[in-house]
Image (cartoon, rainbow, N blue to C red):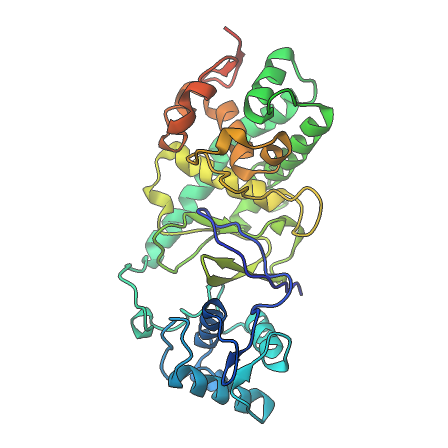
Length: 367
């Protein structure tokens, strides 16, 4: 079982920090510090429970305010699990530890955003999104798997090209990862190869039954969303599906198992190459090091290709930034002409349209 705690800001494609200490910074409830973000976390945690599990009879409004309904819900939960109640949840106390561990272990609390396991209409903040039908969910996963099969041979070819790097390939690597005079070296290339090797395993190797491993990894997040296309656990390929982390996306706690990459209802709306880029981005996180270990593939501050700071990232940051890695893979797979036309890269079209380039056949060109 992997359970880590820490509150942090979310990010666009959702691969944020896990909770590594405790879910709340201060006490929540009667006589508590009642920091708004902490209160929202407690409200979302309690909303994840059914009434029989000690959850509120009516979904709490996630507003960060300790009102009578929130206090009553804390009291009800403590009475249920502890046999006593002081109507306050402390950051290092028994209540939060039992609550968090129950959420991680309970099969009745589904993976995905916590606090939405019951009807969204019952939630105080509500939602106007339309849930995706089961048929559409199956189709979205099927499309993701097809994307992986399309790029499988090019990923394998790129691994081979990186075993003996030509001057043209070295220049292409520097176009993506170098910063000022800090150019790419053999250690950097080995790091990229390691990420590619992990991706290649999941998209190209059949198991004994002829089934692609990726079919066990790509899942659909059924919770309607407005801005998250896909998400995963960093280093998730080194975890089992029984190992869970709780992450935060813009203040919303997410229950996330290992061995899983989640796509949302926004995935199919993306252009073809953006679909591939999104999945490559998540696989870079997924096959990098686990949280707390060296070599983690992160989303750097302003580390997305549509951010104004993207080309100012250091070489180390780029090499450990999922957006930079996946963009390099994407150019090698589809060619420079296709990649520079993508909306997400519009700020830096001139930079990535420089030589050397890759043609539509995946061949390097230097003129």
